[in-house]
Image: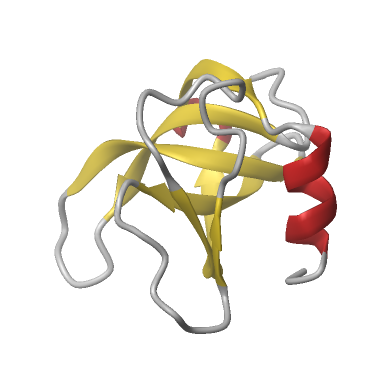
Amino acid sequence: MTEAKPWEIWWAYVAFEDQPDGKRRPVLVLENGEIYAIALKITSHEARNIWGEYEIVQWKTAGLSKPSTIRVTRRLRLRNEDLDEKIGDLQLMDIANLKRYL
């Protein structure tokens, strides 16, 4: 079982919504059960000026290599084996800000 914990950022295999393929991308783990993890998609695209997109303030400290946005409206149900490698931890300031969206 993958030992991912809430508020950790991981590399994961994420399937595309409209195709049978997918890609490896960073995700924020919200919950991790015995079989599935609930996570949010992270993208390097700037946050659009709409509800449901949170631009990470302390992205470097979180282990990300470039400015990133969490897509709050994109909850993912991932198999634990889809979680590949831990990147880092979301920082307390970003956790507090993100909780407003959750």
